[in-house]
Image (cartoon, rainbow, N blue to C red; front, side, top):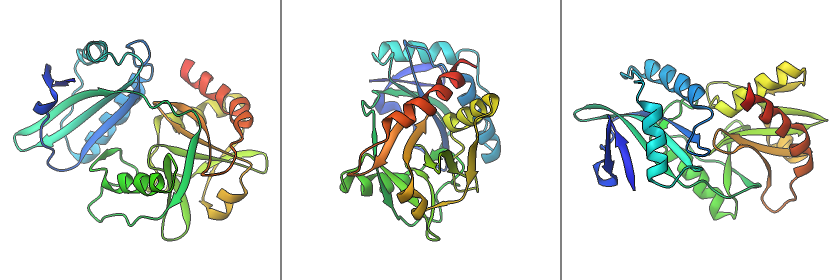
Length: 254
């Protein structure tokens, strides 16, 4: 597999060893293009500024991303763009990988202690040990992804995306309280809902809400919005497809 580092295409073994917090973006590719590129680049720029890391995205990045996706035969896969601090400075790194074929996301509530040195919850960055542990706990229980449940019983997100619950006929997503990542797909879905006057609520959610929900959905920028369910239960695919999928289609075309 080939990667891209600071203007050069290199082998996997050439990836720099991270030293500190490394922000990154994970993007879905279609035909070698990244439809939501500008949204990811804007968030990465904001994050690097917040962390005090130098990042000036050059005009060569989009073309390099296309070339990398084509070279790795990942035209319809996943592109990762990271700003990596290391012993000799900071590197801009792009890698790619296959896209998961999962269409309905099986979820399992998990409780994992967040390490004191983990990046802030509202920042997409490495190290990812906390979210890796959440996902592993869920997979050990037969699920695809883990729901983050914190000590006060609040439901926040999943290891790989944002969470949506249909409660009393209305879609609700956990509020941004500094512990939830403002996902690109989440932001676009909420904006699309506002444009068409569809009420989607952002508020505190707990385990009781999770278990009484009429439907669950999972969103991230790689897969958009997907039906979800608690592990071992039936998903409400029709509700997600009829109510959230049109918003995602509108969001992508805006």
